Length: 432
Image (cartoon, rainbow, N blue to C red; front, top):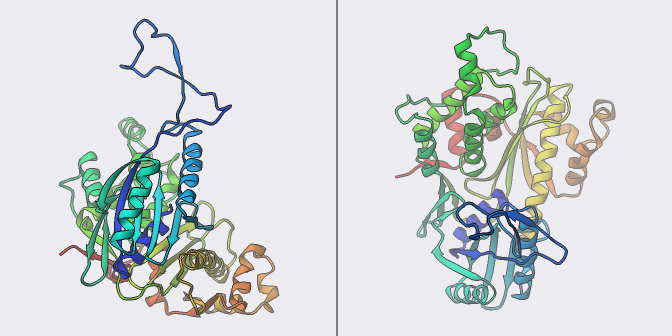
């Protein structure tokens, strides 16, 4: 399941005081007829006297091209046989509703995260799973897909964190004693693939051996999991995977220095509101020196912390700030419609248009009034989907002052005071 779905399930379970359990499945699915796959014998497992022979696989393995497909088909067949319905807009989320309770289970490969309304249904579901597959009952969910989960049952909150991964990164890159900084990226910093700096032979040799891609990959998992505050930095750094220089490496280490001081930050979800979907969107016009493209961003909340966010470079060159903001709002509209479908299929239909807040009045007018044809005829037709959603009452685009636009944290490096103020609105808080 997507990370957005993972956080949504955690939020719903917490608000409703449901059980949040975890089950691990021992996957050994047989390959389908006609799927002939062969492999070399692994070192240490060679058949005596037949070391040059190869194996014909009977069952799927991790990393096998057919493996994920075979397991998905077997898993889906098994879940349907238990009376579950697969969510149409999220193929790794299943729901089963009966008079005695509701079971909502999200799947990440062989890890099942189960939000269950009562203890009897939880026990029944695990017995049913055990009748199909060999399982490991991990009990109350504490650590799922590298994310720690801590629940405050009295106040209906759940806290998601990745402190363990941050500590490993600090040790792996020898930065446990590094100085702390207050933002993940220096305000006003502009990165480019081109550099006029003349490197010495030692610097060129150092550049070739820098673990830049590995470090950015680790930061990316933090950014999509529990640290939306570093999303912009990761978005910027990931553009230079094949042509980075020492400036990019220094900017990457700034991300680690920031994380060292914020490794105890937790994303807080839950509260008293089950589903009150609200979105903020923003754009930074033509901020990429190399391509002239803009950055678009959005974030969504169900009542407490954010459950969905993105900071991405736009696909087309925006000719004005209005264009960039309009495209950002359109992309937020796509995400809003998907989240609304997800909520509706699990029984939480929203009775009012989803608010999408933007800080650009021109983009706001363009999203509501199709008569501005002369100002929008150069924009790709797919972005005008926002007008249809607005007319149908699915969304409601409205204005928010720039200083209160939470999505601003995803579009440009900010000063410390502004950054920390907006970070608080994301739902990130220090562990007590």
